[in-house]
Image 1 (cartoon, rainbow, N blue to C red):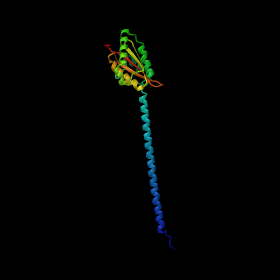
Image 2 (cartoon, rainbow, N blue to C red):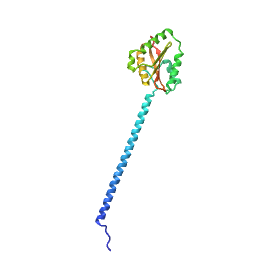
Image 3 (cartoon, helix red, strand yellow):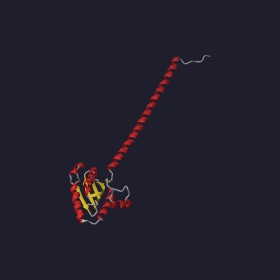
Image 4 (cartoon, rainbow, N blue to C red):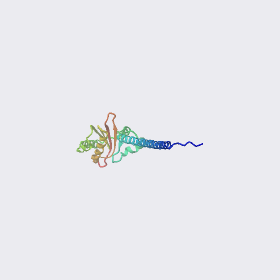
Length: 199
């Protein structure tokens, strides 16, 4: 009995089908890998965007910036003992304000210092800071002064405060800036400074 053989054309069809299936599988595998790579890249990009937004939010919400000078010597010890490092700016301001108000008033020096600081706050340098405060007040005692100013933008408060301290170096010398953001927009700037030794 003779064995039945597949005709040549049938073998060719089978081989062609196998080759086609292999090509299709290869393309599908490549597409799946490409899609997976695209998804990974998309996730990485999303994480980077989220991190950038978080960093930007932290910078915009920075509660306090110290001036180039050191913190008030009388406030440093008490603040370190009673205030956590991440204390809200309102709490820091209350702490410093209580220490400032506890001082006696040197009427001669306080009046002179208040007049000088008010004059400096209206100087030509204000244009460099993008404008001055909408409200300004200063209170000096015997060894400290407190400046209270309102701004329409938080960044403007920082810029104005640092330039103001540069101008006021002849009267006050050790300062701490506290900026309190307002819910309705803008910010309140408080500067607590000590009397210059020869002032």
